[in-house]
Length: 120
Image (cartoon, rainbow, N blue to C red; front, top):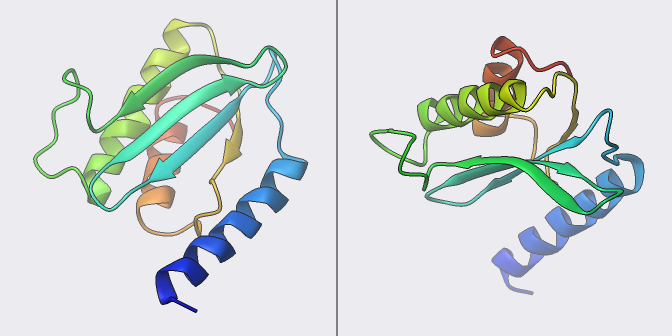
């Protein structure tokens, strides 16, 4: 089997296991993270209503980063999502790492969101 297909399949299985346990509610929505080679995306979701409450990504024009695929960019996204969440009155979230390992850019985003005032 192709190496990339294997990696995608393993990530998909991890993501499915995480999504069985993690669910966003109106009082404690889910902070979902996606990491591609060049960009980072984060959104806060209320799963009961199926609504995205807040989002941020390295593709946003309002967030300025030098390089979009590194840890500094992930920190900027974490800070931005925390600020936007606080503006909407969200203080507590459930973290959904999306099947990615809690390491590197995912960890940097989570730590920056915690510094910004979100409670996991």
